[in-house]
Length: 113
Length: 113
Image (cartoon, rainbow over all chains, first blue to last red; front, side, top):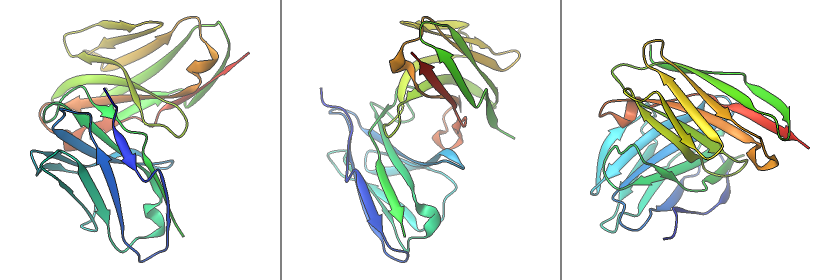
């Protein structure tokens, strides 16, 4: 069974631009969670989607948004990029909402210049 | 305040030696504790998951322990291999709230030949 895939793997953007990241969960998994990882803050929860609905949201500004499609694929969008948004963005999929068993993708490395 | 503290921050050991990583957590109401291994530039991979009623769980050469009374966990690695070089992240999760999952800052383990 294929693992979680994320595209693109690397991205360089300029301050003020917006970016969309994509995540394809493991086949059959219906929950997708997004995390931001930085050297200073570590891993931080962004949001969780289940059945096309956002179920939980972390403490991030409204510039961070996401959505989930009927095939469980998910996208996250960051608008008006700031230098501090440079990070590794990870998505994790699980069978059900808020499951103990989460499988992480390889991440998208976003650099904002 | 919910938090997870890991020690040491970094560790260097010789191949073949054993080591133990520590994790102290304060998450309430506590549901489960997870250990992840994260190779550089990759997503975290789950090693063990323990609920509050479990004291120990093994996964090959990795053995995790949990003391829910003292809110401490440890990850013991036996007969280390070069491929064990990675960051090890401790995660404490409460009941039914993905937004309140707390990630430790990780222990960076380096195995020297």
